[in-house]
Image (cartoon, rainbow, N blue to C red; front, side, top):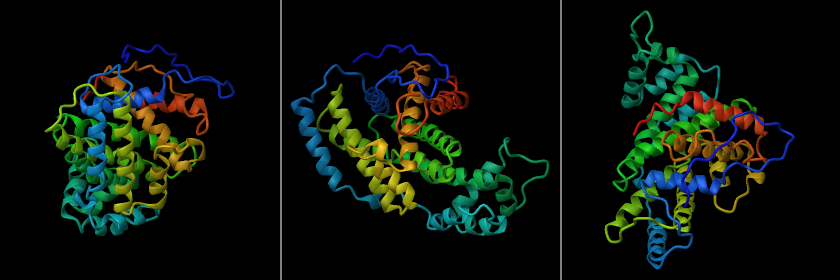
Length: 328
């Protein structure tokens, strides 16, 4: 499998010109999952007999995967999410809900004490901290507080950096989701949320592979093996969203991402997630020199978004996540 750079133009394309995508999305997804698992590329397309056996065992293990083993969501979170849907929610009301979870209180106070939020007067109360954050800031703090430990803890020891890389993708995907929703009339918070949780199942698959790797080494698996793991991860991600009773449109978008589903027939949020997921994968791979940073994906989702809008979203991702800010 070739891993050399792909040259592309960074100009914003015309919406009325039909152009083939610069780079196949299947190849980007393959490279992304190898990056998460810290696996080398492979020229093999078909799975070996050993891989087929491992896939059967993996599928069996997945059917027994207990969603209750995932870290719990704070009991106050559903009510907080509902309240945050109301732009006119009072700071005191939000502070009262946050105050029911001591760990959440600690995270809000930590963030508002950072240099980014530090005000002329010291923060003396939770309500003051909540008002300082604003609703958008509070939404992001809560989502990160809830999901970052889940993605990192669920990744197992297979590929030591897997959890951190999944979180890096979640940051970029949620950013792209919210950007596309904001510029396309969607709900930015639900978009941010679905972008954050969309690869929860990938962490679960990594943990299952970790169990299997104790008996059978996984060195350079075929493209079909990686694709099968990705399909299983999508299924587990949907089950996790259902288990957590996330907002209906978030669950619907996760269902739209199941294998065999068409982007053209997806819900608006499902289309947003499809594009943002791919853009985030490409962005992260580019930062780690696994893909040309200038690859143009603006024509990759013609049934979802205008190429010019996708090109602007890619440019926004590059501005917010420059290559110099590698976390691994």
